[in-house]
Length: 625
Image 1 (tube, rainbow, N blue to C red):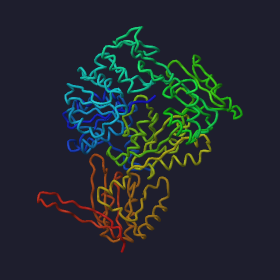
Image 2: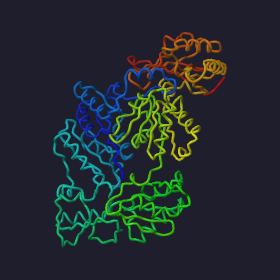
Image 3: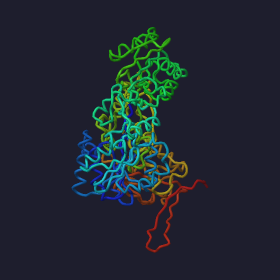
Image 4: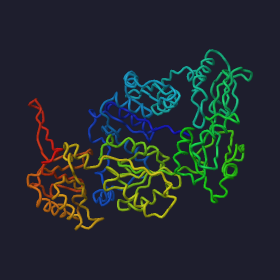
């Protein structure tokens, strides 16, 4: 059953923040998006500097700050603080309204825009096409005095309007004729049901509005209290049935997703045709299909995954202890796994189907193929997080990571489980993630920066490589790239990494200091630009100066150096200096140090206006002398 994405609450200025937070209280998974030019950079929510192992700074901060596991309470605290202090705190900042709303709309994200309805309409108008696929879009007055559903009538926009209006204690401005007359959207059945034909549905509702009456056949509990024009002898009928529509214009068909098909083998290339043939032979609609079940030995079969996607249903796996009994899986397994009232029939060699009277929840049938996605939150500001990372967080059942980074990735829905751990428990965390995912859960492992740069991707792969656990190999593993601290600092400075470069961690927690010294010396001799992670800590304040002495043996004193502290996070600072002037006193554990090559240059640009501020740039040319 599809779950609606968390809405984006979009505001233009601080005058709408109090209303936005009240709406957010109703949708804890939602985030407030504010226009960058009108909000202080302190409002940006962010992540760490792009590394995990040996990150003493985050370790110490995490121990001091702790972690609030109850995300709803965390959200409530922030809402109350914002309302009391009038702070300009938003969760995500965006650059330009029109493009941003179109991006949200195109991704299927429900939009709650706290501005004039006309502004929203003009922004998304170029994308309007298919009414059946548009997400809910609402305009809400900044002071909360009006809630206007604009788009997404078939996606529950009026239900959202009622929820928001209730939270704001105002009446919703619903204008849909059918909803006003009947108190519900007949064409928007609840999760677990599917409308047979939207075009037929629109004609059917139009007839009811014109005076026709209807009877209801089957279990339509959501219509029990709706003031529909009913008559037991009416020619028109709303039918709730898994049977396929026969084209009768007098019927509005709604299909419960109450059919499960089980296949004994993993022939994904023929699965779609076999399933559709089995449904057609019994007059069942493909829209009534809830899941396809196959043996667990088929986990990871891409052809089967494509088949399930083509059918628009979940692919579930049944554990079969004895391969010799695989051919008997379809009927026997369905009889054991599904409610007694289901009708179960053989539908051909190696295929059976079950039909229930009411929708079946795929999550209760067998198990899903587990998924583990390793993401990086980026360098700090929320808009620099990869969209794929946002999607993974949205779809996750479980979120794991160092407590500080997990907290930065929230807030989370009440149905999502959060597993924060200490910074030095990387391997235990990775193994825990695989155990959760191998049980069919969708797990996200959170890192800061890029997960493959001194972060959790390597630990996850090491855990898989050394596990000796064959069931872990069935997990769908994906690593989503992120913006590392070195890349973010370089982008802010210009392009100091424009030619060959290397990244080095100066932490000796996981490798000997002698190895670090050797690598620094070789990189300096090779004239590579060097990006230093973990440059200093309270436990090892001397190591940066020692590394700098090694570099100075091969590099001139006027070599350009960039220091980026908390780049893309609140209080960020960027300083350009030289190798000769640099000392460890200029750096702390949250600083990225980029030491240029012999060709790296720094220059300034001055705006034509005398009042303009000069801008210094650092870059390494693409050529080499």
